[in-house]
Image (cartoon, rainbow, N blue to C red):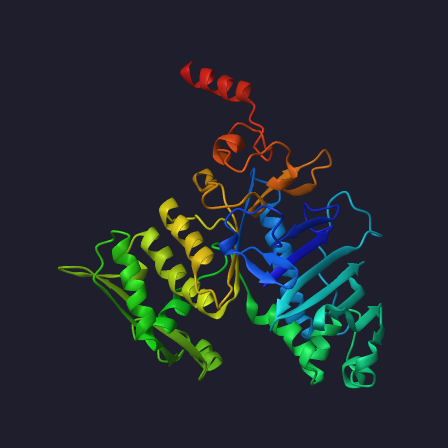
Length: 416
């Protein structure tokens, strides 16, 4: 589970922002919290803010961190580390990323900084029995292992470069349990979904094809939402790219290039009372999104992963989003999945659905830099307050500044 994430100098984020999934002192809905040592951890969090205020950049910073951990081992000599600095930062200002998380009931703390497109600092600690133990600390190309890890990183150090994270190197060239667990948190436990990039159709088909129970649950959910669907037919198979339909004519040179390469051939149909509909070419956008999202979400819930999503409501009805949040709040007590998402849907701002420490806002300051803050940081917000009314009225900030005069002038011009 995710406990805390901090970052600075990433796109619209200039100064350090702090995001936490550790519950505050509020005793509201405590039955949905997860106890971990002296902490109580939240199952979900929601982020509001005007367009361009930094909601997507916050999620992108988390994605960037995970992606660099997973893939920096592949960076070639001389290849620069991508650095998306704030427009007003100078070249001496590092981009920093720090996270605390739990893997197999042990807390970890990991972070790194990038300066002038190379890795400047990096560290990894863990907390067995609640006490901090250093696994490694890094400054530029110098790595200092903790006392328990002397002489076990020799091979990992030999392949380290200033454009590679040491965690990525050590996960691939050592056999240390704590290193592997930390790496796997980034590799498999955090699932970041962006509707403009990700397409989980194949993921969903594969799940339903190999798990009848998953298929039955999906059909039940479709029926409960009033779609009228009776069943689904799915098929996913590997085919040679050269075995394309005859009507698709390719030049010989292209056929030689693709050779025996394989691709996924997918079939998906939604079955109704008197006919069936091809998902990809005939079905509505809303049902397509349900098809993409529901099975992966169920898989994430069952495996206790963390789903982070930008604008979860895209093409989904507000009642569906409400039920998804409730699922994460109430799902199996022995598995702890988390949901973090940005949205513009103010109907979800309900004190029966979210505690005050689960509601976050992004807002641009005078430097056009993102500030991130929680509802608990705002004074005089009662537990029973109508959160939607408070947000829409501007009480919490993070609202678009609309110049009504401009719209009025445009309207008058159109009338003329």
